[in-house]
Amino acid sequence: QVQLVESGGGLVQAGGSLRLSCAASGSIFSINDMGWYRQAPGKQRELVADINRYGSKSYADSVKGRFTISRDNVKNTVYLQMNSLKTEDTAVYYCNADITTRTYRYLESWGQGTLVTVSS
Image (cartoon, rainbow, N blue to C red; front, side, top):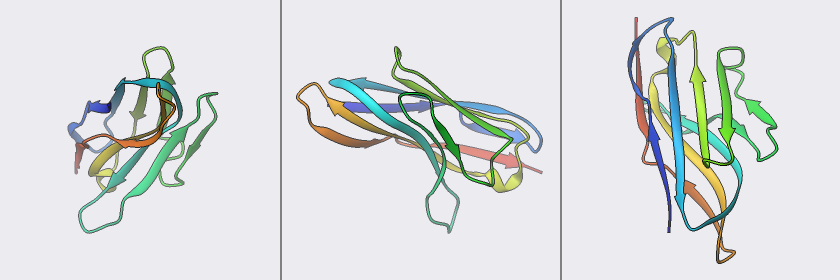
């Protein structure tokens, strides 16, 4: 009914940049919070950044000043611009969205994940 599709992951050297995108599609009435999580090997999934429909943002301390989250409410898309990447940013990045469907059901939806690998 609702699908989140991520893109933009890949391999980059430390100090480099990547931009992730996540587009939501399907039976969507509105999207409230959208965010990015990540999970490194052997670690728990953690929140990287989120943004509500009004543009209010929050970031994990580890990425503040380096990552920027943004969204396009017309395209139902959230972005994560990642600059000054570090090897410890290596993880699978997941998009998350709190969606109200056209039938007024509430769904917490996840993308399939995109791998970001930062080499030294």
